[in-house]
Length: 444
Ligand SMILES: [Fe+2]
Ligand SMILES: [Fe+2]
Image (cartoon, rainbow, N blue to C red; front, side):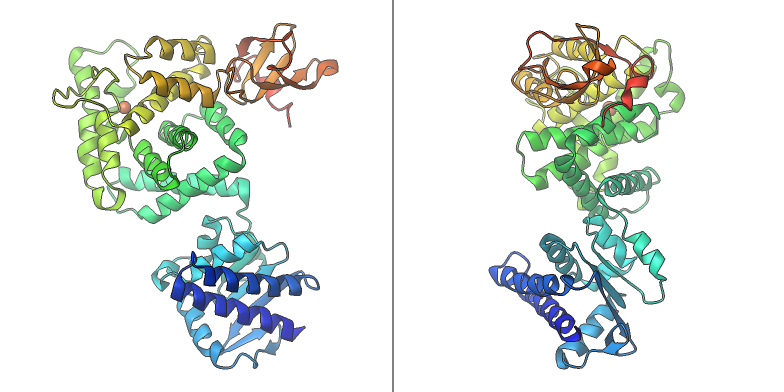
């Protein structure tokens, strides 16, 4: 057994060296990854896990010390120690992709490992490897490794919220953490898009400070990825969207949340959040680029160039500002759903479509609703035959006729594609905080 483990570990170290020399995109790396992965698979046919530790200057598997690896080992031990790694555990179920990501991470600079190295793995969604200090008790290491898919999303959302609050407190931020987290959110979006959009469309009632910013970031990333922007652009758009309203921190809460009509002076004050935000994001131009500045500045400009701030010399809103503007208004209108029955999705759709061509780029707006659906995924709706359904998946060819799951009454429970079944249609939306509430948990 020990030899097999030694072989696996040796291949892993070779693979790491290849990654350092050629990078992880090179075919040489792919070849050596293939070998290493094969060796691990071989071990996993007989074992659940492989745990390797650095004891003193030796590398050990359980109580046995590796001797065979000789010289290769010396530098490897030093290398791992420099990265605060004294213990490596690989679990059965390890995928080739995880191994590749793992090597990608440990081939990075040692400065990356100043914090808990396990977090770096959690960030990219590696579940079947854990790394860290030897003294950490097993249960704790396992716990740290448990950032699996759905939690990874929450975890990433927390990270994003932390960065946002650092910015609000004028602290330094780590753009890498922000991008990795947003990247995780995008990845989660592509795996469990419906679940997550549901979160963004339904879970809004717990009115947090960041909910609007995060929602607009998620909608913008989803929208731009469906528009087939490159992934790196989608990330930049997410960052810009996240900070679009940052200028509001300069405006008193009293003015921002004033329920009655604003005086002209107060309205001017609110309008200034665009310029203030743009100036503010300029401080982060080195780490986050110019896009957050542009979007803060322009997100209340309209397609026909009315809106604010007045920009007589500007001909056209930046495409990213147009994207964020649509998501911004969509989220702001949808948020009212919590307390105002009348802002159901059809009302939001109608309000926004009234401004199609004036406030919003008409083509972009059409695409937006095509992707989001008329009735957002997760909505509780009443059908023309009196049954109640949850919206499961939009149909791009007819946004009013999505795929649904009938959840009540009991004897009608089933999935229906409204494109296929012409006899049924959605009649109205049920507020998820009021009459729709009891049906929310019924789907699976
Ligand atoms: Fe705004
Ligand atoms: Fe906004």
